[in-house]
Image (cartoon, rainbow, N blue to C red):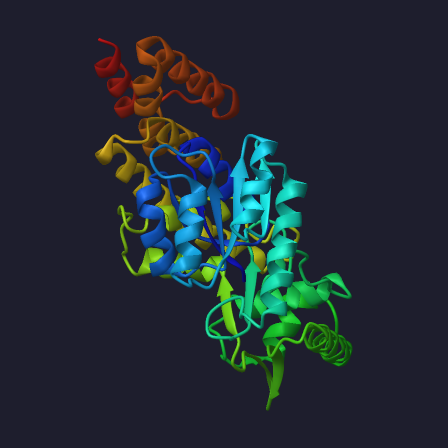
Length: 377
């Protein structure tokens, strides 16, 4: 998986490029709005590519790039600029590419392709230490990206994708019985027919993985299969979310960019394209993990009082996932009051009251009503 750092003194631009990179399957190691911190961050985190704004006060992107090359840091540089006139300067310092603001998705993809080709040509490993990486997304449409590939792996059948998604949700290297897989994927078929379909699906998955030069495979064991990783590094969004939540980790200044990225990646519907009955328990579990992490991040925003717009957006996002949870509504009501005062808070409360009256024949709870009164008095 390709790794990047974004440096731009305009926070909104840095956040936009961060989101676009995540959408393209790139791991954003960090973003920086202070150009003086950029070189240290790059030296410490060793990304594959550094996205640098050229026009920054005090220390320009050109100067940072010159120091990167002087220090022999092994990374590519892609410049971000509002003016075409800087193109010559960009290539003078051996930058790989430059992007014009506002950055368009197709231009970013072109740059990422160039980075991938340059790293391959130079024999530089995309990822750490030459180890191949596989990145799976179970939130939203199920995808598997190998290394820095922009296009996900294409499966022969929908059952191939579903079986691999199920195996990724088990403890890796755990043996899963064939009878469990029959029940999950072919519940209405007899054992003989389900067995034929399972063997065929496993064979197709393994051929697809081999064609991608992946060391990952579904390995046959006595009465089932296990996910064998060989020497491949595997990253799965659901596993990262679960590890963070169950490990009782807290958002802080050091991991903020990672937590924000994780919340963004996990905000989409879980197992979106699958409709088997097996999905529901997993959807409930990971929805709770997502809400738990989202609330922790919202609490961090509230404590630091540094990101009012982010806090408002996050509060509304959490409510979208559970519109009738009044603890989430209380957090959102506070953010709407903070952002728009008493009038906005009252309008938000009234919209919620109308929703639950129409949908549930209910009224807002006493705690939420008392909170509105305290905020607007």
